[in-house]
Length: 405
Ligand code: DOR
Ligand code: ZN
Image (cartoon, rainbow, N blue to C red):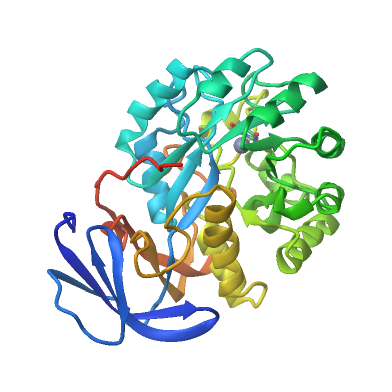
């Protein structure tokens, strides 16, 4: 059902957690925004009954590779966003290692046009290179600047410390892909140059990396991200999955995995993001397979299953997947359910038990490292800007918007 902006939508019987207390309320949506959260039953053009299911803010995934332009055999903004919607993710920030890479103003503007087919809201991370500082300064309406300090898919590595310091100075937020000791190097450069901007450490994968990040979490200036694959898998999974569990950074030991979970609970980890990095099965089966795994569709089910196993509570999921990403990436009017905020939300069935099945996936690559895993807790309806874009297995192709920073 597409709710046009003038229409109103009432979602009845929503189980909500507001400031850590549970309520059953009705949510009235008007003009794509949450107009009322109420115990009354206001009139509306359309009504959805959430049947006492838990309703949470749509997830904000600040780290996806939707592969457009140039790599659309793996994913594109439509398929990636469909997978996101199915996974309860209502906003994504796309990464720059496309073809061409998003490292010039022209490439950014081209990507902007291509992304218009997305059914979830989107923003762009601009890529830093050794020689694009003038483009970095000019780039309009970007979420952050992505800096690769270690090699990965694409050719975007920057090694020169002075250039790195310059990039930190220019960019309001720099997201670094750094592994192991490079995390320390990045933070040392950041601190010694007395940078006033922010540094976000992508996909922290080990106890050591988390320690480096933790020591320098100065005034919320340095933030740390973990991925669902590093939380829900470890190096032992490589034995059965091989290339299908190979990503950068690589899966670590069970001890590291535990340290990441501890970070989730003690606040050292600021957010969870998928690093959704789809590659085709055929590509993964080759000897020189590419690194990366898809994840945007399975993050929320994995976390809800962890909730059902008493490993995490719902308020922590909402903090790390909705509230904190909105705050860190200064995404306005999103990340919490509040009157006046955007109507980006997801109805989840905490009791639904279902296996992850490749054939059900909407990502173009159509496989998951979690295939076969039975999870309890699934998104059932996803609403973006007041439009139902996913409901009970079906996608409704209503276009979303670019974020405004
Ligand atoms: O495993 C990865 N795959 N890590 C990255 O940093 C990039 C990504 C990709 O684009 O495939
Ligand atoms: Zn990535």
